[in-house]
Structures are given as C-alpha cells and as structure tokens.
Image (cartoon, rainbow, N blue to C red):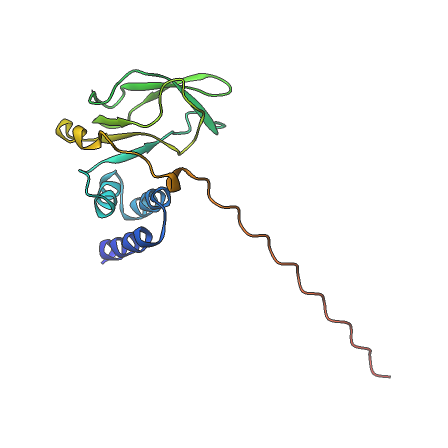
Length: 171
C-alpha cells in the first residue's frame, strides 16, 4: 500500500513539476520508501523512455560547500567505476576535493565539462547507469532548461491587516 501511494505521488509530481523538481521529489519519496537508488531509477523510468539511470548532482564535499568547479574528470563517458573510485576533482572556494563514488556503475553522460562553469551543490554533473550497454542511449541527453533554472523567489507576504480600533469601554 505504501509503495502504491508513493507511485501515485511520483505520478502527481511528474505531471506538475519540472525535471529537476521531479528528481528532488523522487529522492524525497525514495528516502520515505527505503534505502538505495532503486526508487530513483523507478521514478526516472516513469518520466523517461531512457534505460534505468541516475542523474547525479554535485554533492556537498565539505560541510560549508555551496558550489564548486569540476577541475578534472578521472573517468570518461563509458568508463565503469566501483565504490571508492574517484571520478572527478572538484575545486571549492577553500580546497580541491576528490569525489568518490559510493556504488558501482558506468558514466553514461558527463553534463559539466572540466574547468567549466561553477556548479551549485545539487545541480546535475553526470548521468550514471548500471549496464555499459545503456551508455549509447544517453549520447544526446541534456538537462532541460527548466530543471537548471533557479526556483522562483517566493512571493512577498501580504502586509498584515490593520488591527481593529479599540472599542471604548462603556461608562
């Protein structure tokens, strides 16, 4: 029953949100439904005709990291990696940090070039798949502009209603 409710929520998210918010929503639902990336892959399958994949965002590699620049890719598209392998180096405002993978997989698409623009934590940097045979399907993969656009600023709160005038006390 919980899985059916989560799937219904994913469909609702898919029908009303941008790709970026769908992935964030899938990640939140994934934490609610259990550990691992399987839920995200399942949500991606609902949203795409592509093989099972994960769009990987730039992680916070230090407690204060807000953005970074991929300075070097150690793995290229089509290269497989194992847990603990360094796939790229990321320069922050304070240090250069190695990005180690937590699972096994294959890099299907690099979305941010080395020495490219600064990337905010959470913004997509690559697409990974489990099977090397799936890499070719991502040759033309691009993140939609809507997913990369910043979220609109919340509307200003309306001014509070004036307090009612005090009622004079009867004499």
